[in-house]
Length: 167
Image 1 (cartoon, one colour):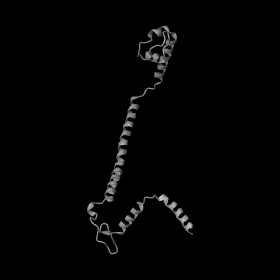
Image 2 (cartoon, rainbow, N blue to C red):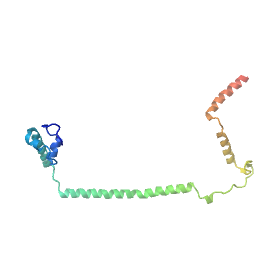
Image 3 (tube, rainbow, N blue to C red):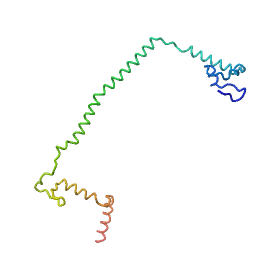
Image 4 (cartoon, rainbow, N blue to C red):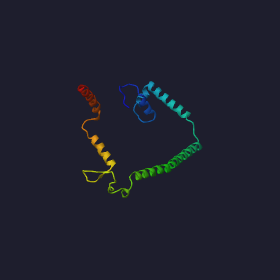
């Protein structure tokens, strides 16, 4: 809203402010400067042209448009309700999956059954050791080796060279 130099022309923003009555700043300059007053008159003519070009809209058209918007709003609410049964079915399936994956503790055996014939006794615990427990024990001992598995092929190379050296 301020002019940079005395006698300088008004900026486009200052002319727009004056056209819409937002400021009294530059009124004296508009009276004196023919260039700025002609620019303001051109802006006012353009504004009048645009106002004349705006088509008038009937109230019936606006009411029909409003009814169409309201009907679309009602349709979206019905669209969400259509998914509710499917969401409920998915939730039920998830709950049943969790329930079936973790059966009730009453159905789990509390103690190990008596050893069947041919089952070895576990010497550490004094109880029977099933084939499954033996398998887990063997797997655990294999995993507890200090050496990484990637070193096994290298050992194979050295064992082959030792066998050749002995021959």
